[in-house]
Image 1: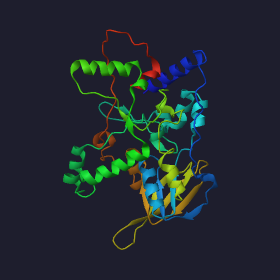
Image 2: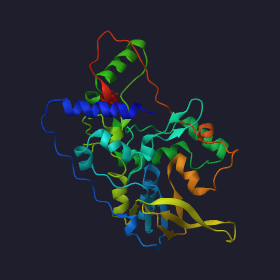
Image 3: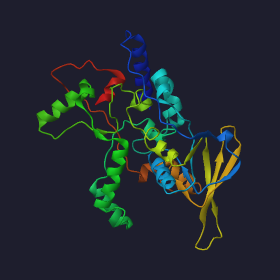
Length: 335
């Protein structure tokens, strides 16, 4: 649980101790976003669609709905952070504000695992490594066979959606010149073992190898959704309410056909509340927060995320090399 803060602290200390380098090119100006603090939003309002969460899923939903002509409001608990801010502030200084629970969210299981989730306009895309992994065919097959999603999980149709996402995010194979020494050694070892290996596909054109992906890219190279998708959603008319903690989805229980969502109840940072009424509510708050918005508190017998949620923990992979790598601290994130 303390690994990332320790590495960031080491990286911050190292950055301060290193001699000044040649000035890096100035970060590009972020695209405009229509962000309104929750404290400035009216207590009661209406929209054609409300999207809970401004991360990967929420941003794409907001863009799609706004381009279809709907009045869209996106709700985000965190605030907007800019590329210029990331360049000015030390990595450790950014960490606690960018992550939910200061980066200490834990999924209890065997073993327990830290689950770093972002809390900012752009969601976890602001603090992930930018790796873009296409949905495997085996997962699409499971969706078709177990959940009946025959049309949605059609490999050709779904592949076209992924192609569009990759174009928007500018996904490409990472160039070798920014991998770092540890990444080069990993590729060398794989080649020696006869394994197929290559740099990851990432949404970071022009990456400078700053190794600060997990605390906000200071060069603006990583195309997190606040730099790519959300500007397009706002250009189509979507608005983003920041500092908005969604307490619950409002429902109309007596509608024909059963209860339906009719809006959301939101808590502001000062504890006051607001309501946004809407016939369409999209909850895209991630695997951990979405169930809490959509359902009553779980009973004692309800399995938690550790029992039902597939994930990919990043274990350490030690190895021996005939040459010594001088890469240390958070710079190891380059691989």
